[in-house]
Image 1: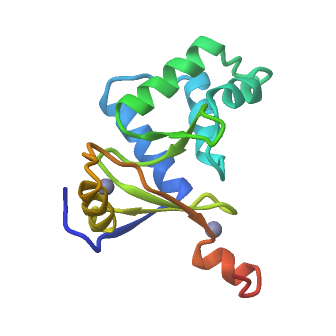
Image 2: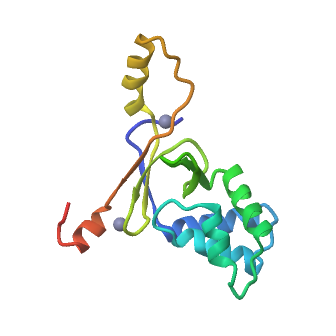
Length: 158
Ligand SMILES: [Zn+2]
Ligand SMILES: [Zn+2]
């Protein structure tokens, strides 16, 4: 875990380029279905489900099969490129991330993601729960909002 205060902006194009580089480094061929999947994932502005991915690409010219789409999502999740986020309804969606433990602030308008390293925001909560006898063993912290560019585009709306 690196020090607190380090914030990295992960743009849609950054994520796409890094994932394609990781696929190549892993010896995976950049087939048309895989490129279609990565392109769709990179373009999503809010967390998405695997079902939405397969539905969106069902009629894609690259003919992306359901099994191919699910395998791609698993590959990305196992290697830390997608974070699994549980929804209020209890099912799972995915959000773009980078390998390693990060916290995310996701722009709901353009999909730009700020990655925070360091967990100091969690420490006081962990200590509070410890006083209640609760042992915290892990955490996920996701924030949603508008990036600086989108606020400017919306005329300074907050
Ligand atoms: Zn934005
Ligand atoms: Zn953390």
